[in-house]
Image 1: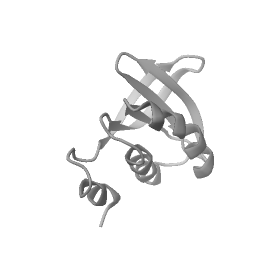
Image 2: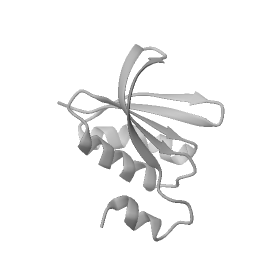
Image 3: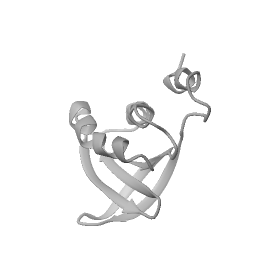
Image 4: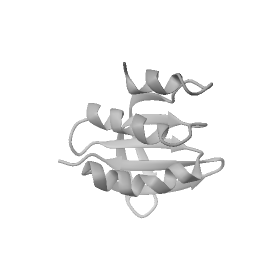
Length: 108
């Protein structure tokens, strides 16, 4: 059973979605960052955003950047530690109207 399927058993809202994307994003303090995958975790509670992000990181190549969109402040706070545990780099957490965008670079 997939992680997302398992989590759906305990929540009314389906697990977040992820999709391959190819876009360049201006990240404050870093400049242009090339994003290859986006994870939509809007409405998701811990630990769902972290689990979905772990799944996506296992699917992208070393050095590639993943964008995670969240609206749960507690989940946002956990991403620097998650990145360190996974050998990734937490590039930034950018606050926008109604959400955060977290950028992680997969380790080599």
